[in-house]
Picture 1 (cartoon, rainbow, N blue to C red):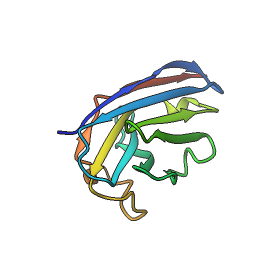
Picture 2 (tube, rainbow, N blue to C red):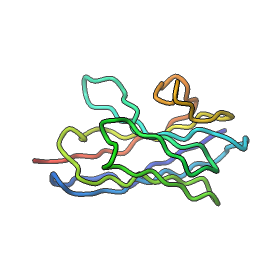
Picture 3 (cartoon, helix red, strand yellow):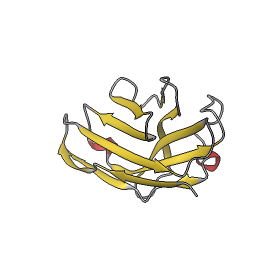
Length: 128
């Protein structure tokens, strides 16, 4: 069973930075898509970034391109989301998710239904 635990959320002023971590365990396939999503009250869950395990080719949503950086530790499948130049629109609950046995394909990495395991989320609040 895949288990994901996020950490690193918090409150920051606009223009600041935060780094989120997601510890992933229980993966049984060589290739898996690990993604970050976020959700604000009253809004749909939005894809932020994703990466296929064992690769160095993250993909990003347009809204965070150039500000967020996703990386991973291959040894233990921990992924990180370095967030910079934060603005109040980035305020949300951030979730880590895993889709086992698949690559992060451009056609569907942004689709929440593709992922079959989710973490509990970590809150990010950006004040102006």
